[in-house]
Structure formats: structure tokens, C-alpha cells
Length: 171
Image (tube, rainbow, N blue to C red; front, side, top):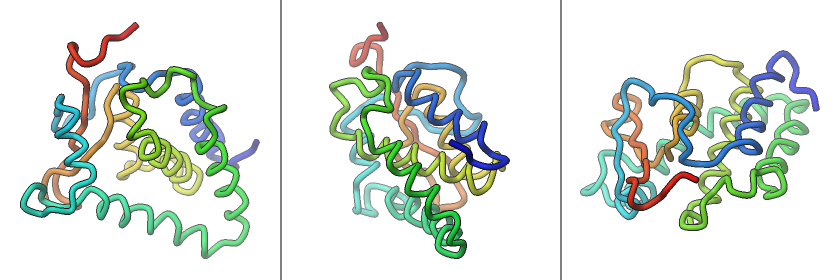
């Protein structure tokens, strides 16, 4: 598999899903995130459409960011094949460490797979420029699940779920 000049960056994301576990900390969190340790609250932040509960809906933030990625693909026909290949990699459970997503979190597995696919796609298109998806990947690498946005996008910061020690124990 070749991803042009950004091959090593894309492969880093693929290796992350095959060699790691979600919520396993590999480094420290980006400097400006809000951490939550209540899983039900994290899901509420991630999926709520109620603007009384959140500053901006997380799905809207992610939708706006992914629109920019996909517009690049639709403009250049030669990118579509790589997009399809990356999509297949991140949709197939065969490419993940069998313990990547703990059983208690299977209800968010499609959300996580979609995030990681878009992170790899972003790296393929944009390299390692600091942007939304690079910051999101830092949150995953640090052992969290980016589940919301605090503030009015693009001003603000990620909200990241990190299990409390009594909910999830590292093995």
C-alpha cells in the first residue's frame, strides 16, 4: 500500500488500530482539552442535538470537518481509489487489535472507526499539518475518546472521555 509522500503518516494510524487498545495511554493529552470520565455524559455530548446541553453539536463539528476532506477527494478523481481503500481498512474488524475496543464500549465502535478512518484520510491528503484531525488523533493516542466540543467551533477545545479507574481497568 502506498499513500504517496504521506505513507508513513497514514500507516501510523493503521498501526495504531492494529497494535494498541483504546483507552491505553501512550502519551499525555494535548494542552487544551476538557476531560470527562462519565461514559453516559460522554455519549450525551457526542450524540446530543439539544443545544441546551451543548454549545455546538459534535456531529455538526465533525460533519463540517469531514466535508472539507471529502471535497478534496471529489475534486481529484485519483484520490477516490485511496479513499475506498482506507474506508475498507477501517471498516474491517480484521485490521484492529482484537482488544482495541473494550466490550463495554462496543456501542461507540462505529463512531471510533469513522474518526480513525478520517484521521488517516486527512493525513493522506494534508500530511501532518496541525488541524482538527491531527488534534483528534492526539486525543486517541493519549488514551481518550474525543466526544464533544466545548465552545463555539472553531473556537474552543475538544471534550475527551477517559474512563475512570473504577469503570475500566488496564490489563
